[in-house]
Image (cartoon, rainbow, N blue to C red; front, side, top):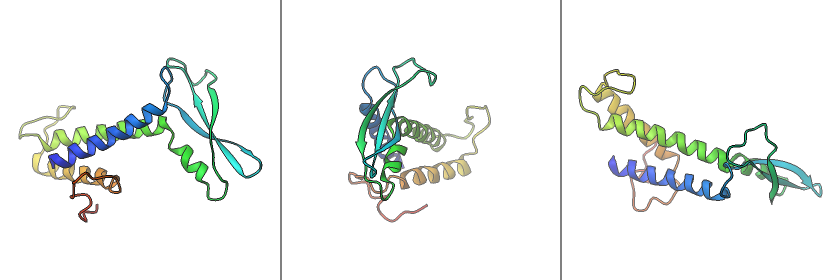
Length: 155
């Protein structure tokens, strides 16, 4: 289980780092939106970026970053995976993973963040299942020799 947790954490952190690198220094994570169609067939994907410290009330800088053929709604899919959204999902997955790892490594008598006792056998089993479910979402990634995810496990 430790190997799976380490692999999953590294995979999620790599995604988060990639999304952070897309955004220029000094700017918040960019939001991508579908912009107007150019030439009737090529919708644009626009990057809406704000400087660090600016709020949603501030007018963002807008730049066209891509064109996508309008036929299978690829532009909608691309825009839904903007850096801001990817970073938020990665942070949520890392938080879930950290909580699961804490429960998996708990001893009898340990308490959770609210002060309640952790029931080790049941909680540990559920936490292990949650780690597998998180890993299942990354099953098409480079597993770097890790076979538990690719080896046929399904949630």
